[in-house]
Image (tube, rainbow, N blue to C red; front, side, top):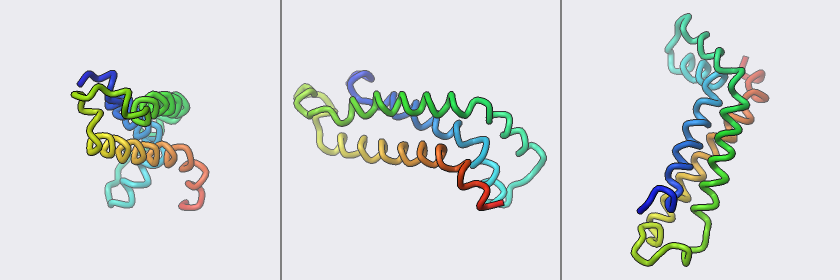
Length: 116
């Protein structure tokens, strides 16, 4: 199955961008909650200026992934992996997990003051 037919590349790009978008704010809070601390955690705030770019990249990647995943099954050739219901269901689950990560990255700066 080619990468352009599966939507896997878009999902991976969206997931990485979502994690990077939340690294400046959510990352230090999670690390401190887990008991990991140190002065180096302050370096994660250096990613804050790039947060809008990461969120934009994640949203664009998710649009492409949505177009690939939620297209009609007849768009897949009978021999392609994307025509299998199990694979399509797995892609849909991963899509919504990545969408949840992106929503967390979008909402966390507004919820963050409630924790500090």
